[in-house]
Length: 374
Image (cartoon, rainbow, N blue to C red; front, side, top):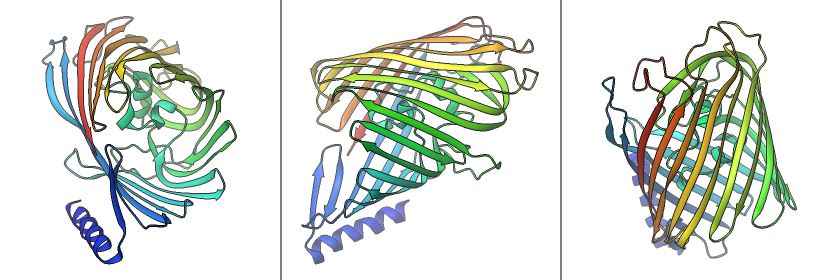
């Protein structure tokens, strides 16, 4: 990664010095190099998200508080003729540099594009929303359960997307077993199909729905908290059908949005197929007491749920987990964001999984994240 940064820095210096191109900077929007006619541009932007987590639950030898770097990402974007775009995102938070995204977008008809490479799948708007712009420290728990399969998240494949006036669409075909933190090769012949439609009723209100069709290898789907620790785990395999609905209203001060999905697993219930349905969703409300996303104070309240339905007798432990989140988001100077999430999570029965929540059915957490982006 260091060599890549050096090469790009030398390229930028030579381009400006010898070719007379322009260099500009937008706080939070990165550094942009382009020619005078704007036929092409090269942008680089990035962000670091540092977290502190506190758990009220101290039993079973679990660490009750910790510091962490959640993400340390660097993006490179090349645009040409408003028709072609190359986008690469790297994450350097771990012991190695991880390829999060590597996608090429080509506009084949005005407002209609094809995308190939490693990209975020379109099934969930919450998933498709950049981690730079989440209203809470983590995405909702039901979605995080799907990330861990891995099911949703970033995948290798091809996608068609575009817009007809107020109606937008997405159609993707992917391997279906990838994730942002790893670059997994295909491990089965089935492909993950996702379809999504979105309608802009007004400039402030939109709604839509999605469908997902995939085959699942034998895995476990978990009920997880916001630090990805499990309250329970259920075995699944075979064909899965996913359905999702969502709506969002947002103006300069007020935010109201939510989404909910249902996954159905078609195999007969057994010790290897312990649930028939998995449901997840959230609803949230936000209000700017002052300012906006560049410089302001916003309050966020959110309710989330994740649950198993139609359960085989071999599965014990909690089947429903509800979460309640409240806290402020502080934005400064277009590049700074501080999020403080007070979270109460409640399962419908004590956990039987060895770990932090063994014998427990609830937890109070404090999650904080400080983000600096350029």
